[in-house]
Image (tube, protein in one colour):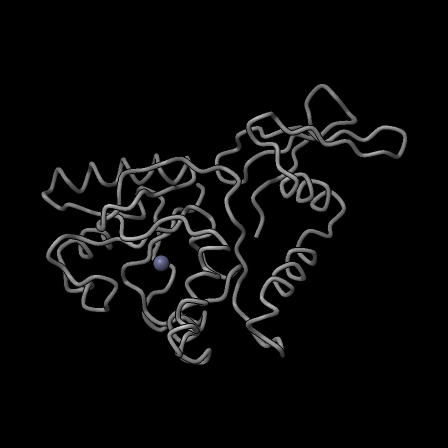
Length: 233
Ligand SMILES: [Zn+2]
């Protein structure tokens, strides 16, 4: 649930670089002077949320804060809080990527986009046409997804068998991609019978992509052969 790391500044003892945890890109600087902490983010990365994350990462309180934030955010969905999945945070950096299989625009973290483009190209050379089914999803989108199902009369217990609550989807990170291939099963276990899946199993790791929910995984989420996530090297 961290988007950043704080690294010492070579020349300034009172400063730390705020860097993107995935590719080390400098997002800003944290300076402490006379017991005061100042955070300066580069113009294109300025956001209240990221500033809070930098401050709280420095203070060691970010993990707890985000946990509470998501609890509050999901109040309307859960009265008694017994939801025990790993938390994820919305990416602070997103780049438009190609349209998905259903012609919708997609967004990915720049590092994930770069790796995805490389992997897609390599697969294409072997006549495997990898397609995005779903990439980045915001907290709001996830909320909307669940509210839509509730509005259709589906009960929460059944919804949570196939969807996670906002804050718990790896798609928030901008690094997870549901991958498909024309003519193959979409978001179904049978995707693992496809040539595309065979290719991914052999090659995806070389591009930094890993299957998050393999068979018999212990996360509590069912087998998802289509869901691959870019991890930093
Ligand atoms: Zn997914």
